[in-house]
Image (tube, rainbow, N blue to C red):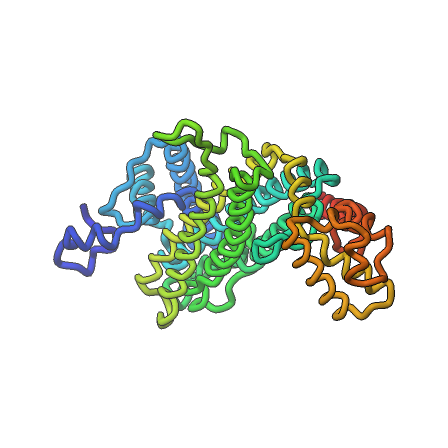
Length: 457
């Protein structure tokens, strides 16, 4: 098969080289974006008088025909044509004849592939934004249903202070809100047009880059042709955002794994998001959150991979940059699938409110409130802290919890204790006492929910 660029060569490409350098096995995912860019480019060529409008219409009809065949899965791409651009150009020439060869006037594969990736990432980023909203909606739904649910809050995975379960879930809402905002902001950089920059230096044809950008819905045009074909910042930014989001997905997945264990029993995941054991019939394994946690590594790897590829490249285009696509495509697929699973898994999980409340009545997480109690009585906090430490040690040694101690026992540590200490130690009181903005009291959680609803509206 004769190469579309083969005029300068006297030998056929080595078969191993052909397979090693071809990208069609993965960049075929950019087929529709490649056609979209070509339709805008050829329209611009016609409007600028670079090729006749009759030829423009023939080429456009040919591209639309190929597009429909791709959608119908009727196209077989060829490794011999290396990439999606050459494959579509050959298909076009087969479809409409030699006039199809005019399509590539005034552009290079360098600006063409960059345009494809801008178009692809713009579309995928917009879809991911909507998927993040679905996760936020699921968190918000569970938060509304658990405003009265009290659970242990943790630091160092040790019980720290009682909190409302809604408060815990809303922490993830705000993490995903920042992820969403990062995705939205990244569209400013994604929506630049490199089309018409040529191989690196522009073109001798009197093209109108602003017109092709307008046809493609881009906000602006790269002002420097070298930068246009060599820039992959927008992909790095996406991979960075995806990596941060996968941290959040992994963290909540880890908590779902822990909470659904026999030791905690705080939640039960719906059967449709779990699997069984091939040998132990009693098992219900949280495979989905475990796999979400595990897939974080591949997204990090894609970011580090592209950073490493780009770090030493001279301007402008280099074949190394072919390595930009697989990581980007894989990350889009991984993040898309993760968000689609996370939302319904959160929405359908059963919350064991009684088990959570039992946990906060069988620990020492209300100890801080005793210190605060003594402070309100006039004792310096540091002195109160020492006293409460001794009370906790006494309770542990006597196999009691703080609500089990008598007033006499409390007063043996300090005479400032009165009967109202037992009201202060109730989990509900502990929670409601934290009424500072952003705190875990019912009032503050309800305010958070209103703020969250505003972000989604």
